[in-house]
Length: 457
Ligand code: ATP
Ligand code: MN
Image (cartoon, rainbow, N blue to C red; front, side, top):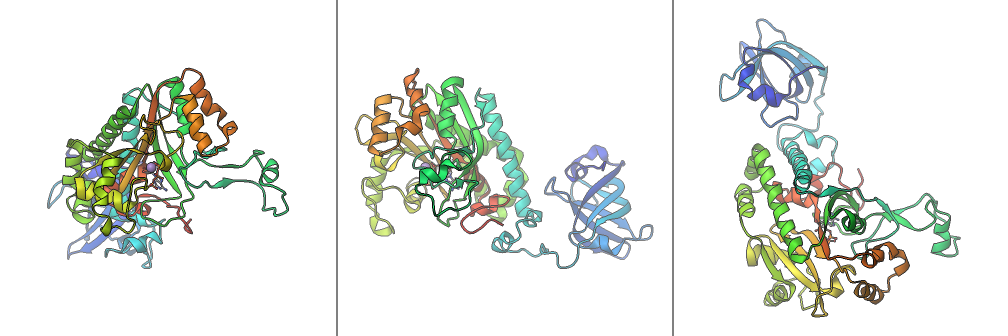
């Protein structure tokens, strides 16, 4: 269908006096004695197009006036009678699809909880349209950022036989029906599709390292799967993961990249989605615009795990899980650090090796690893990264301590045999970023069809 996007029809002053055809869904209808007004939305922008129907020359089909109905309108664009932009004087209004009164998206504001029960329709609300426009702009900005800096975009496998030790529970990939008669796990999987136990990847990092050891700077941007058995507002079973991996890089380089990327993405969304951010600032998170402007121009803090624990211990009485050196940081601690102590994003560095993954570079103190989590107010962890252990013997020792099957990591160990170099990278959860820039508080509301425990609508 040849037609003009409403974003263009509304704002382009050069089109005044010209005939235009627009398509959209009816958002409001009202009439006065002489004219009727339809407001149309087609998803291309916030501002809707006001269609003006002169009752004396055009009789509207009643179906075209109902909330949610889809129509095609031909007419002449003119300067809006009130306010800025254009409106359309209709010559014809044709119904594409009627919309009965039981349409679940009514004009009154409905709750996000309710909208989660109708994921196929909730995108028709202003909130969700704004979220998904921001999400799209942010995704494009991710690719632009890396492309402009010489990173290669690689696609790591989603089906994998390794489990990126420690990153989370894996979903199994199998074609076999359940067979309780199998003598052992190994025998059971021998007859399975791959001949071994396989699952959905929790991270592209291990393969990303393979690529970085040849291409230098790479990133992946794709789905990761985690059988998270927790029902939080920050975890999904399927999420999108941005994972750069850089050769000839140490922990400070990883931190610099993470901070630069985050600021770039925030600035891109601020520049390209001003109307959406203003909307979120008014209706979702008061002060959002100020927060983003501050973050884009501030230095992120860096705090060692040692110092973080010292600070947190002073407030142990207020935590559900009191901390001591060696504790993993829970969400309440992460929030305390970034919201109460700093009021801005904080990189926590040098965690105890026992609570982090085998592949992280062991520091000279023998106790900690060169890992970092970036914590941000309102969300907690948004990025997890590290310098990787590049020393063969130390990596093997870390695997032995964890009783890992070294044969399964032959390729990964080979990277430390053949021209090993210092390198590192991180994982940024894309949905957590979208939550951060929109102020949306539940990860299920920044994902088209969220998957989580007992939920696959
Ligand atoms: P968390 O402690 O929040 O569970 P994690 O330490 O398991 O996260 P990493 O393995 O470091 O996470 O993954 C890197 C990033 O991926 C995280 O910082 C987060 O932004 C994102 N992420 C991890 N798990 C999930 C999930 N289940 N849903 C959405 N995003 C996730
Ligand atoms: Mn992490």
